[in-house]
Image (cartoon, rainbow, N blue to C red; front, side, top):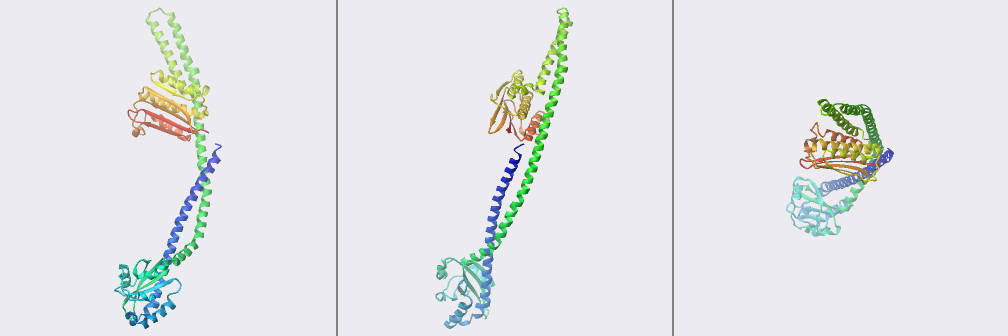
Length: 432
């Protein structure tokens, strides 16, 4: 358990790094939203300025002479436009008739030019609405604005004092729109950055507390698992000792006594045959009980290690005609609790091979791979359908229990099988 603080620190560090990446992404997205919002608000401001100029300044000064192209009327409008409209970011104004003729522009070379009004232009002219878009400087009527590179074109419908609808356009430097938008979103940026940083900092203690709780729960589960394994081992040892010192010794004595009694009886008599059969049955029962004792409490596992204990299991299958190939590194040195867990898993897997697999051969291998102890038991038996294994109350219940035990120990348990393709049991446990 010494790895607890390190694992907690690693988990918190991973959370902090992930949280920082998320905060940066959120910050980037928020900046983009603010930038878009700032630009939108700047365009709305430009529309408002155009509405004020169009309806409050230009429309009241439109005369019949201006519509006819009278130089005096044009000069009068020039004075109004240059003194009250062409200031700041507005670089050009145009006044269009419904038929597409430019009635007035501060650039006099455009007066009288006849173009084609688009659908949006005609709608604004009829409805008196205001709209804006980046100006297409490639169009002929915009040829004198090309030196400005990029302009925002705001157009709206106005009415002359006589009630005739016209289209008023103003052209603003787009750089000023962008700058205005930047000023707007930059006002909110510091507060946004501080809020995101505080959010990240506030979550780190929570992540640390959560990691400690998770680690504490894991330690408690591991402790419960160790106590359960220890209690099971002690109980198995006690039962094995009671059987060995009691029932097995008594049966062994009975077999010796029956053999001795049989020798005192006449050869070929029915009584002697019955006594000899009883002695033989007693010796067979003793052998079976001793095999059971090895299953309950394998002395080889504690005395000689995992290889010897697995060899004892393999011998039992070999006696039943099943070929067993055992592969264990000669210099294998595993902690006792891991050896016990691997032995129990192999024992359960081989028990299933004996009882259910109808196999001809089975391979048992133990290895250490990338800091993990790995056990694999594979047979060439009849296999089973994995989709129904969870619904079975018998047969593979022990393997499912072993899988839960391995996973509770922090390991990985895989059971793979298919009808006619045998069964493979694999478990992995991290080495300390």
